[in-house]
Length: 90
Image (cartoon, rainbow, N blue to C red; front, side, top):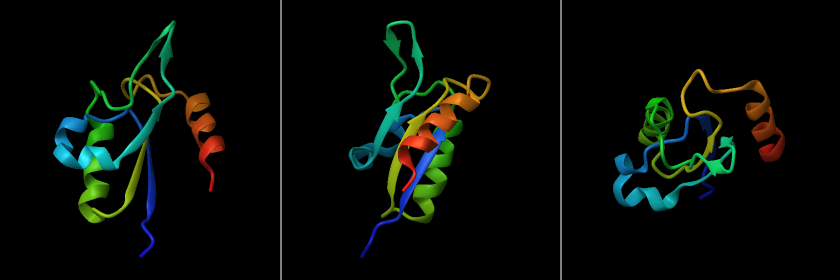
């Protein structure tokens, strides 16, 4: 059975909501502030977490790829979303 791949391009997500399932997810951050990186598995804005939970509840066998493009909804920039889409087009 082929697993469906789903990219969540959002504010990252809070892995603590997924317990042991967290190990199944992959991700990358595109949020860099100076020399620091805002990790994809940490989120102060719950939107990305909610989207991941909704998708995962529909298909718990899917492969979720989390692309963090902003720390909150006001921080999401078109340039970051475009960068992610250009990198991960299948």
